[in-house]
Length: 207
Ligand SMILES: C[S@@+](CC[C@H](N)C(=O)[O-])C[C@H]1O[C@@H](n2cnc3c(N)ncnc32)[C@H](O)[C@@H]1O
Image (cartoon, rainbow, N blue to C red; front, top):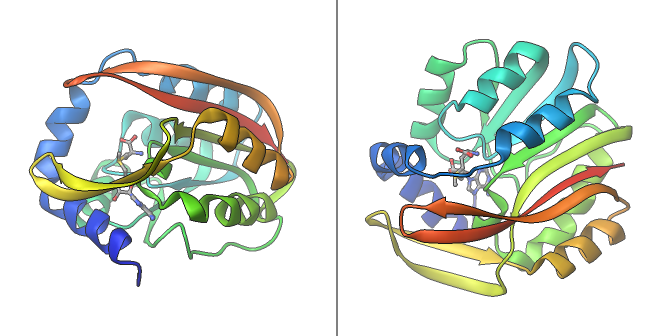
């Protein structure tokens, strides 16, 4: 983990794990369960799945672990400690999604909820290409991507220094297409965060 922005995000999620937990529990209108269901319908039993930026062991991580062979990846040691405790059926790896590697064609699906908006956006093209290469032909990528036109924002969030970055949906769509993905479904969805409404770009894409 060499990028200073990535180190900042990792340290932030280690330090504010309790605050993150109560903040995220207060988010309303999150469509993740419905999107996850539409992915699960496409997966065979014991599909091999990776969840990037898995966080602290969410309801969706538990659901994925009950139905697939799941590996969760996260930068934050504390988020992973909680995830391991809550979801013993999954494997977890401390790693950076901008550099981690999986074997070519080795995965049936990659899932990522609300993590790419913490990744410097100039890295997204390369990351989408790597995710595409990890998937078997016909494999799926489900993600809630950032939707704002934000080159890089660094400031205090939930009491810690934090970094955000994202492209608007049109650019996300172009980059996914250039990486070789076919979009099955994609929609901007607005959720209610404690500070107000925020829009994310939900995508279900197929290799
Ligand atoms: C907004 S939280 C979302 C957590 C979980 N997916 C959820 O929906 O509750 C973002 C998570 O992504 C992790 N993260 C951020 N950047 C990452 C990166 N480059 N590689 C791996 N994990 C990352 C953070 O540590 C944090 O746990």
